[in-house]
Length: 64
Image 1 (cartoon, rainbow, N blue to C red):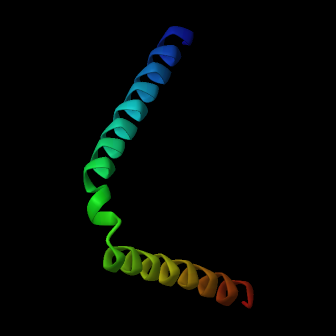
Image 2 (cartoon, rainbow, N blue to C red):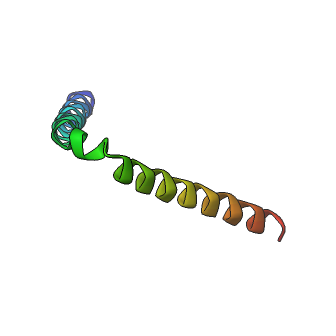
């Protein structure tokens, strides 16, 4: 069981490294676009709305 667990752990780690490499390369190429004031403002507003909705859901769920 140990060798197969080690193999699965190695596969998982490799997939994680590949995923973060792709993510880093994608955001690097998009960095000039992401730094535009309109895009930043839209991302900030979207993030704020998502966080506010999570907070509202949390408040409403704890009242029950």
